[in-house]
Image (tube, rainbow, N blue to C red):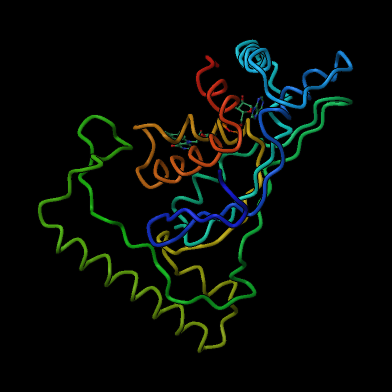
Length: 238
Ligand SMILES: Cc1cc2nc3c(=O)[nH]c(=O)nc-3n(C[C@H](O)[C@H](O)[C@H](O)COP(=O)(O)OP(=O)(O)OC[C@H]3O[C@@H](n4cnc5c(N)ncnc54)[C@H](O)[C@@H]3O)c2cc1C
C-alpha cells in the first residue's frame, strides 16, 4: 500500500506523492449517486460497474479521484511535454465546469538557480524510421565525445547566466540562456482520468524515453490508488 510522502526515483530527481483523494470506491459511489445509493466496500458488482463506466465513456466519476504529485529534478525538456496535458479537473454534477490541471513551479524570477542540469543516462541514436524517436538501448558510437560536448555546453550556459547576474541583469532575463536540460520542480494535481490519459500517450514507445520513464512511475502510483479504475480506463478504446 502506498503512503503520503512516498518517493519514486526519477533519474537523479524524484516523484513524491504529496496527497491523494479517493479510490475505486469513490468512482462507484459517484456513479451510484444517481440512484441515491452507495457502497462501503468494493464488491464484484462494483468492479463490473467501473468497467461499464469506462467502456461506455461515463467518465466523470473517475474525475473525483485526485492525485497530487511533487515532481523534483525534472528537466525542462520533459516539463514542456508534460505541460501539454491540460485537461484535468471537472465536476460530475451541475453545470459543466473545467479547469486546467494545476501546476505550481519554482520561479526563476524569484530564485537564483543552482547549476542543476539533467544528465542523460546515455546518448541514444536517432531512430531510423520514427523521426521524433530514438532507440532506448542503442547509444551513439562515440558516446564519450557526446558526454564531453554536453557537459561543456551546460557548464558554459551556467557560467554565462552567472555573468549576466553579475552585470546586474535581472533574474527573469538572465535565465534565458539556460538550456532545456535545466531541472525544475513542480506540484502537479490531476484527476485519475487525466493521469491515465497521460500514461496512455506517454508510456508508449512513440514518446520520448525520458517522459516514458515518468509515465511508468505515474502508472505505478495510480494503479496502487485505484487499481480497478486505472485498468478499466487504460483498456478502454477511446
Ligand atoms: C508521441 C507524441 C508526440 C507529440 N508531438 C508533438 C509535437 O510535435 N508538437 C506538439 O505541439 N505537440 C506534440 N505532442 C503533444 C500532443 O499534441 C498533445 O498536446 C498532448 O499529447 C496532450 O494530449 P491531449 O491534447 O489529449 O491532452 P489534454 O489537453 O489534457 O486534453 C485531454 C483531452 O481533452 C479533450 N480536449 C482537449 N481540448 C479540447 C478542445 N479544445 N476541444 C475538444 N476537446 C478537447 C480531448 O479529447 C483530449 O484528448 C505529442 C504528443 C505525443 C504523445
